[in-house]
Image (tube, rainbow, N blue to C red; front, side):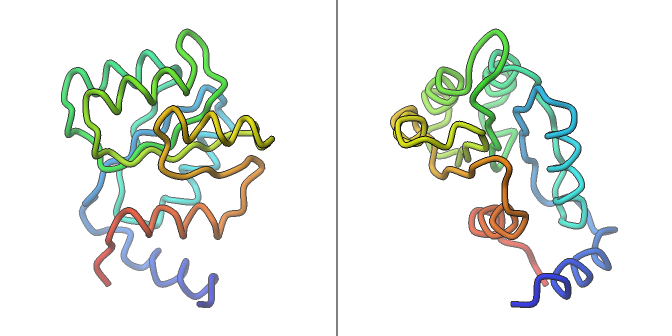
Length: 141
């Protein structure tokens, strides 16, 4: 797959309706802006939570409001491990992708033990982010 061609083709379709909602749980502005830029050419609407408690609150208000969660682990108030466990109690079928700098083996194990479905290490590979999101969300061509 030619990555550049894919991004160009997707950007042509960027005016389509936002078919999916992704909750990005990220307290770092630059981290959020980077994810927003990477996914801006896809038919997704990003909603940001800056801490784990905000993420949990979003699901308590509407357990089906999102199609995917991109979860940082080091967060203020409630960390990503706790937030993931709570969100999975509310909606066990929601895919949660850990996007974190905790790339050591115990950190990865802790992510999966808390209920994360995938793990992406920061700094992340853009192609990997796109591949994982495409794996969980089906985009119409």
